[in-house]
Every structure is written in structure tokens, then in C-alpha cells.
Length: 456
Image 1: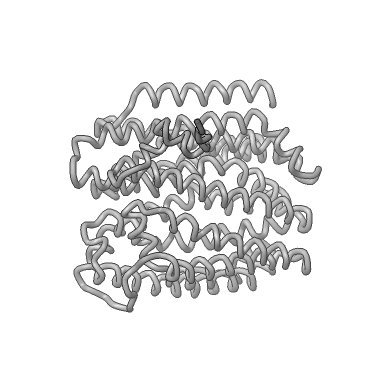
Image 2 (image 1 turned 135 degrees about the horizontal axis):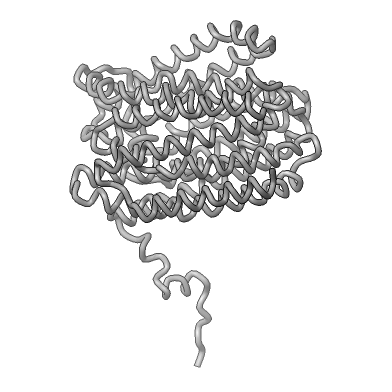
């Protein structure tokens, strides 16, 4: 008798490996969304890391310091004018209504051009403040990315709302491939920071064009519906304030670091930050892309399940993120020595601190999304205020106490205090998972003590 040799896919099917990913239920969609998000994010980071290794051998650390400042101010403009359009589409019952979507798209376009204008207006004062004349022309040029992004399809939000993340994941990956090729080629030819600037614009343009070409959507047109406008602005007012404050406790930290350290040191910190933030960024992206739609659906259909669903979401994110961040922190020096030359050696110590700071920052993951899913955008704003006060206080105190290492430790201490505050507030909503939160916090603090006595 002839027996058919089972292939690998048949073997997986026989073991029901794919069963959890089948169907259109919330659990299946969330799992598939998590897989797509992880694969897409991982691929993007591999591309970013690979291009970074090439660029660090072509360009000098000062170039990365300059581009880090440019990125900080562009992110600042974006965050300062965040109207919460995407989460509003995901959360609102009219999130698939054409009139509602066209109103959101029109607001998005107007916002993009306003941001570009502001970028041009602040470029000269910033160049004088940081004593880097090149900031003026580059910031004016890169500012056009805000206007380009304004034309992105609203399908980026509607597909996320439905947890249909296949094409949504491939889109930024394709845009990044194009941008990496352009950036590396220009850096090789001109050996200038302008290569990084052009790469940013190319990425934004490619992403915008592909959002209309490969994502299923309605016909976009300029339109303002009064009711939709009121709804979007009402929901977005606290989002606006939250992101405004979150900037200073996140990317704004780098702007302040640029005033305290040299462009070369800032470039080295940027390299360490890029390595340290991979895992925490993926964790936050998974929470935002998968967690917010899932929690919003639960809030609309069965609010009593919110605590259990939130607990499962947070457990699955933390059980993966924390061990990886701890390993990165413990092996930071070896990682930097292996991938970078002697000019970036100091990034090893910075990476150890930043990875632990990232671990502390992800501990309260999911809580802000839970409040947003029930229509409460005010509480996340309070969280961001507290994070701002603690982290900036830690940054300045740490820098004057020790220097660069103290500055980074201070930011991590701010993240720790923020986490404690969030736990106190969330306790009143009965959303806590005491065993998970206490064990995770103790684990990170124990590793911090180990690293302090071992590496410092």
C-alpha cells in the first residue's frame, strides 16, 4: 500500500494549530490581528535595523543626532494637533458611515497643511536655539510629510476597526522598503543627513498612495457634516490634550536631551533608544491596533466581560514583552559591541537603562485603552499629566546628579512612579489584576538592582 507522506502544513492542521485563527469571532480576529501586527512590526524593525547598520557606517553620529531632533519636532507637531480621528472612527457607532468618514478625512487634510506651515514657521527659531543652521531647511522640507499624511485613506482606521489587518500590515512595510532603498542610496552618494530627510518624505508619500490603492474603501471627497464634526471634536478634545502632554513625557524628552548634551551624544542615545524601544513599541502597537477595537466591541456588546478581556490582553502582552526587555538589558553591552563600531560603545550602558525603562513603561499597558473604549478620554489625559511631571523631574534631577546615565535613570524612575499612580486609579474601576501587576513590578525592580550592582 502507498501511504502519502504528510507535509508540514498537514501536520499542523492535524494538531489543530490553526484552529484558534479560524472564524470571524472576536477572539479569532484578535489573534489573527496580533499575528499580522507582530509579523509586520518585526519586519519593519528588521529593515530599520539593517538600514541603520549600513547608515552608521556611512554617516557620523552627529547626523543621527540632527535627524533625531528633526523627528522630535515633527512628532511634536503631529501630537500637538492630534484630534483623535482614528480612535474616534474605531470607537464610534458611525465609524463606517461615508459622511462621517469624509468629514474625518477633510479635517485630516486641513490639519496636515496647518502642520506643514507651523513646521516652516518654527524652523528658523529652532535652528538658532540649537545652534544648528541645517535644521532650518531640513525641517521645512520634512514638514511636507504632515501634509502628505493628511491625504491618507480613512480605510486605515476602518480596517483597523474590523480587525482586518492583513493589507494594513503590508502597507507600511512596502513603504519602508522603498524608503530604505532611497535613503541608503542617497547616503552612499552624498554622505549627508539629507538622505535621512528625503527618506522620510518618500516613506510618507508611498504610504499615502498605497493606502488608496490597496485598501478597500469608500469614495473619498471633501465634505463637512455638522453632526460628525461635533462628534469628532468632542471625542478628540481630550485626545488632543493627552497627546499634547504625552509628547513631553515621551518624544519631548529627546528634545530636552538635545539641549543638555552634544549632537554626538544625542546620536548615541538615539541608537540605544532604537534598540531598547523595539519591544515596548511592538507591545504598545499590539495594544492599540488589536486591543482598542476588541475592548470597544466588548464595551458596546457586553460590558461585564471588560475586566476579564482586559486581564487576558495585558497578560499576553506582558508575558512576552518583559522577559525580552530584561534579556536586552542584561546583554546590552554585548549587543552594541557586536553590531556597532567603537564610536557607539557608550550605547551599551545607555541600552541597559533604556530597556528597563521600557519595561517599566509597559507595565500599565492596556488601562488607557480600556477607558477610551468606554468613551472616557479624560482619564488617559490625567495619566499623561502625571507621566509628564514625574519623567521631566527625573530627567533634570538625574542629569544634574550624575550626567547622561542619571538622566536616563531619572526617566525610568518617572515611569515607575507613573505606573504606581495608574494602579491606584484603575483599582477604583475594578480592572486590576493584582497578581500580574505585583509580580511584574517586583520582577523589573529586582532586575534593576541586579544590573546596578553588576554593570555600574
